[in-house]
Amino acid sequence: MIFRLVVGAVIIGGSIAAISPIVELPGTGGTQLEAKLDKPSSPHWYCAKTADWYTLWLDAKQLVPGAVECWCDNVQLIYDEEKDVFSNQEGVSVRVPDWGQTTAFESLSPSLLLEGATHYFSKFNDALEDGESRPLKLLASHTSSHSHIRPRSHPHPHPVHVDAAGYSRGSSIRGAPYDFRYAPPSMESFETELKALVEETYAANDNTPVTMVSHSMGCYHALYFLQQQSQEWKDTYVHAWVPISPAIGGTVNEMKLFATGSSEGIPGVSSNTVRGEQRSYESNAWLLPDAATYGDDVLVSTTDRNYTASDLDAFFTDIDFAVGTKIRARVADLTGSLATASPGVPVYCYYGTGVDTEAFYEYSGSFDDEPVVTMGDGDGTVNLKSLELCKGFSEEVKAFPGETHSGLLDSSELQALVVSVATIAASN
Image 1 (tube, rainbow, N blue to C red):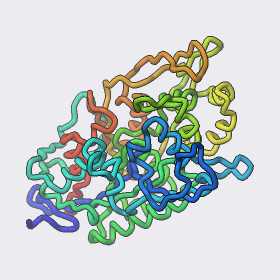
Image 2 (cartoon, helix red, strand yellow; image 1 turned 180 degrees about the vertical axis):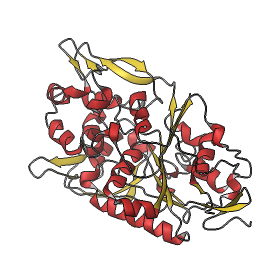
Image 3 (cartoon, helix red, strand yellow; image 1 turned 120 degrees about the vertical axis):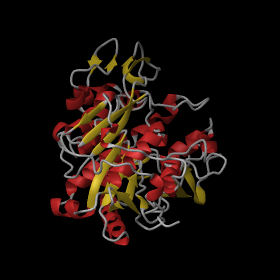
Image 4 (cartoon, one colour; image 1 turned 90 degrees about the vertical axis):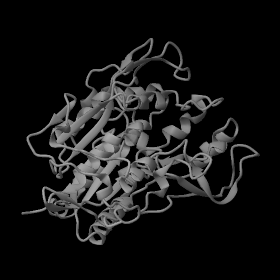
């Protein structure tokens, strides 16, 4: 059809407007990982020590009782405290497939049997490519009482139909998949490659500035990345940044993950079984609650004391993970004060609210035991205090009552807003 161009165009008020190409950054656990094994040992006789490249994440059959211990040993990181570096287990190589494409995070699993059940960005990108069934009548007045608007106009105030956008995976929809176990101190090459991807996408789309779309921890990476770039570079290559379900202030559920582990509801698998693997991720230390964001909120309580986000050193000691203090120090201030963060580009932030989200844990015995959980407001994964941080640096913030952390990506209203943001009004 006529609009199926590398970068499409729409008619707005009689003028031609360009559509900004999109570069997407997924969240934690959102990118498929592949591994190759040549290990000197394994935790059980039935755990393979050698294997050619195979799917490490996500493959459901590796997460069943018994097999999950083999998986944990293969995926967990090793922190060398003396050298202050993270690495894979000895004899384990891990790679991220399909750099520049979205295939590694369209669904969490490459298996056709699980593709639908584990879909992630697939429906979101389907909507950008195939809009015949989604007329997007977006006006500047689309905001509601749940929106926070700064005195700056939306990219355009006129109706847009997504079919006119002309988006296409691999050309005007690009992907920046990454190994979600790491945080920026271990990801220098990722930042370099992401910058090159933005520049490449800009050039391949008639020198049209790029819209960065990120989800969950991907928003933390996007903020960090943008802060590292010069204002001149951002003015040239970035049209806007759209953080969706941002986790930039950290999440309370990380406290339980470090203390007890989180089995994520996998039948027959205890939280303690996966605790070591989860503690080993540098990124999980990055996602711990930010002290300035959560203030004096008590997040964990035992019979002996309370813990706020300012008590992480004592918390790490008490859960017998003292090295967590040093790991947290590597990542705690990467983006500076979150309340006054300055990405240096127009920001349009969207998140769900009104969904029960873990906010407080009460332990009556050992940290090995499951705590009593108290719920608070959020999107089911990220707490409201963290989600709302983007109000401090956004042109627009819109809350979606009842939408969950990843479910928001499937919202036709959210998809419409992203296309609206990505539409660049024609210059007079």
